[in-house]
Length: 329
Picture (cartoon, one colour):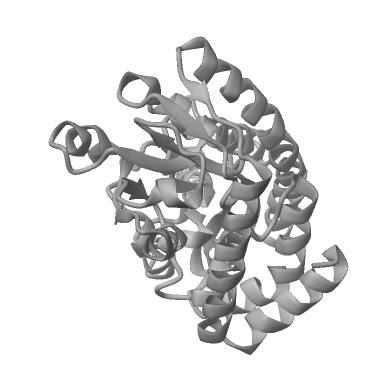
């Protein structure tokens, strides 16, 4: 009888251990940028804090540099279908599936970080409703410094843009190219250098931070901060994966996410200033934008935003109207 009790105790202990092991959850997170990028470093802090707060019951494994093989335009569907639990999704890259999400990626729509965040806060409820259709929610967002253009020659006016063969990363870049005579091609960073060596590209459109990541000074000479867009990145989780978490864990994750979102939005300006200094240190010329050039760019932006809003629908137009009212545009 004693042996039987010992045996049953052992079985119960093993089952408890097995149950505990099953209770642990692992999420793989797709990240677009390299390990040293500040967005990736922020995601690592998020993962570390979640693991600590949940005593290891929820672990998030990062896969930077698009190592899982997913590309920007397909990320909404990849998360929706559960191919990956969590993904970093730039809003401007997925407008083919959800046009309104590209609101925060419209050309020259904001001029500073306050306006960037105001626009996102106004859009947030509409974003959430649209993301439900794709079986996901946003845990937190981060923002990029404003994007400029990297070129072989100085760009001083709209006329100077004509004829550039430019790498862009979203629909905004493509429409901007079409409006200004740029031959714009959407492609990932990994293909930029070979394309430039082959003569297919002579310029690119991206932020100061990405320019440092790519060591743009090795192939290009000028950076012109036209500030076309300050892209917003969403960190989205598949709803089926999210709903498997108990309410306490969900609350902990959302608290950590909210804190990190504030941190990441505040960090963008610091990273922009540091990246500008790094570009100059490595021999790149940063060309200022004159008032006349800025006026030309703003006119292009107004035209393109109006065209986009007509296609994106009533929700987009309503948000834009309120945003323009608050900012006095």
